[in-house]
Image (cartoon, rainbow, N blue to C red; front, side, top):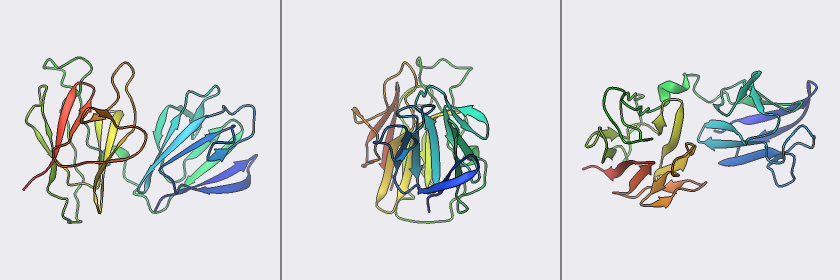
Length: 229
């Protein structure tokens, strides 16, 4: 189940927030899910993206920055016990149900090859890591196939409950397996590149269900989703 945030000021706990929405915002304005009325906090300061048990924190170009465990962040995968500092307020992330593995071990990374030419600003497969999946279901036959670039024709089985695609340290999209299908969500839009698309349409802020033979575009790279026989 998703985690929660313990809200405190000057070491005094003043509230608690369950991360029960896929997207939650933090800021000074009243339209935020977590409102912090302090001049050191920007109107829309940071965003939380929660997918199944995992939550990701992103700074929204705030004036004074967002910190996790004392370090400034732009985008950060939260781990149980992480302390988020916004202004003089602290939000401690608690999720005892999440895996304590290093996040990189749960990620499919597609890195650009340095020895071969690639399309400008494109990504191509170089290192792929898969986490063993003991749960079997009707969607285990789903795959991704790279359609262009130096990795054209390569197939990536979707045998994990969740995978990310993008350059190492800068994942662009995440594909999550749910009981009713695979859903894709945009994690980031690399500077100077087109937003991720499915069949030519921007993915947008929410999760989009993938259909057989949908074509995912990450800048110039095209990847087909299909349910293999």
